[in-house]
Image (cartoon, rainbow, N blue to C red; front, side, top):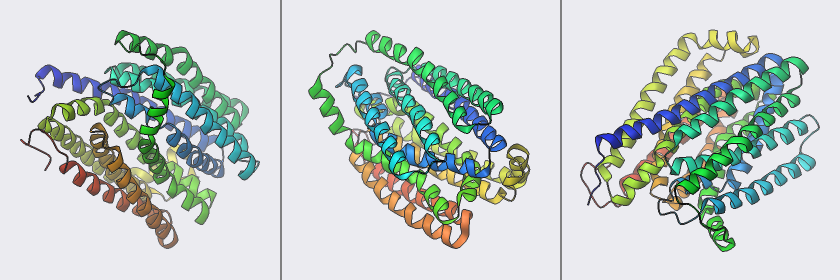
Length: 421
């Protein structure tokens, strides 16, 4: 029997998305404030170092996250307990930070070492909040996610600004970020997730064999996340290598528009993935397809309008907010917003594919997309500088969206009415 969502279910879905958006928008605003502080109180090269450090750290953590959040949120049959997800996260995050330390000691110069060590530790702490968010999503408690993101965002931004203004040290400012995130993760998120797990009957024992099975079944998600992070980081590698740290600093600023849109879109996808998984299980193709189509249309329209605004006042905004070092980048900002819209639409389609637990198909699409972005951004950097890199990103994301759409159309559902077309 097809489960057609009632009016109450639709209202609940909107509420879930609303909480997810509130949390992520607050977090995006706070990360923007951190970037402004970095641009105002440090050099363009320091901003470039931040961009390069993030491009090295994030792929490592994204792989060793093992897709725990998506796996947990879509585990509608509760095959694994919260304790097992938590143990996997402890081991995987420890290994990830060990790899970062090894890279810092062997390959990184003295100017980058403190940035990577402190920022790497902060991102390591963040992985445990991410674990808790998976539990919150599964229990459809997106208000808990929003609360955590707001507190982590504003607390981290406040300490970052305070420390960098008082000391002028970017490393010390990253340390302030680490302290703020640790307080929220350890003092709030882990306790709330544990209580929610017990309240929803998730009292399963910690079984070593189940943790190993979880790690193995999560590998497609891990490789997908690694390729996703590399896809996002590859433009920075190309710019840093071919155009220099100053150009990378400029790109880090204009590309924040894309990062902001992507972060908000991921929040939407994470808010609805459990509901999409339910639609998939009961065979409700109509609700599944309608949800995806509406979100993609909303994203496309919003980012197109943003690109037009960027062409008109982008130059003034960049110079006013970040300073004269970021003059002449209005076209690149507009291109970044176009890239954001295309990439965000692909992210929503990917959420649909993940909700059906077709992790292997998603990984195959990610491999093709990654190969495309490496070739296209390298060629773009060589022939057209920053604009060429961003154009390469747009084309690669378009390819990803087309492949995801084709995969979703071919999904077997028990019902065919109003399917994905």
